[in-house]
Length: 289
Image (cartoon, rainbow, N blue to C red; front, side, top):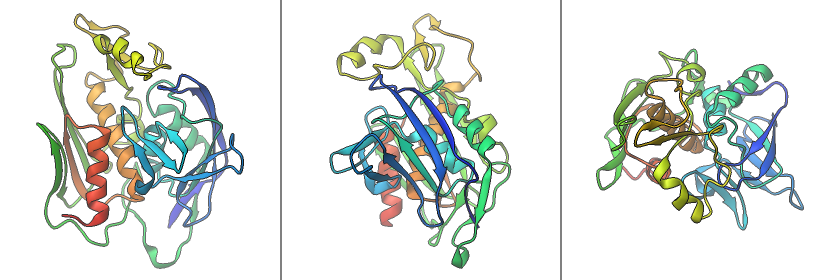
């Protein structure tokens, strides 16, 4: 069985990088359609699949595109949909970037929970919901037989053979308020909506001016992102003592959801990025092990 949402939901807000308010409507979709975006603000309402082959940019967020048409910062919504078990969804958006909301996936998860799921019968039983309370759907026709990894300097992300799906992440920052953090999350043990979704995106105070000069984070604010400086957090309190590393797991889940389903593996990352996440996903998809 695979699932879609039982009813439509809608959220709006400002985009992190573009700084423009957009509205997103998520609607049910038929079996086999997968998760996909529709740019309803453009002539012909072009469709962009939420698939790995559509990734067009990974600078401080993940962007999908078809030709000259794109949609940006998709990872939080896609993580929520995948983690909540929504295999098929039509995502309509009236601009080029998804709203950041409060910087986490909590509001997306709440909206999905309110919309509820509708199970869809498909032939062959290709997808199997094996986890509770977070029904991440997995499909592994060729189980991992050996580790797969990509790295850049001391940063890396890997997929390791495992009897269960697990995500582990490490970060290391010179700022004392962040420092070195590790967290390991298994959907069979903890709810995504409680353990991962509330973790907000974070930024470093000394980098803000430079990023804005490059045309990035135009919509970032203390209302939608945690900001850390040399003297500590500018806008506490944190939702978790290790909120930054939990947010990195959120991003990893969203990026890997572009595979369509998750191979059963232990995904392990350290100081990684959207670019490294996508590189690993491509190796998995290509069978380049």
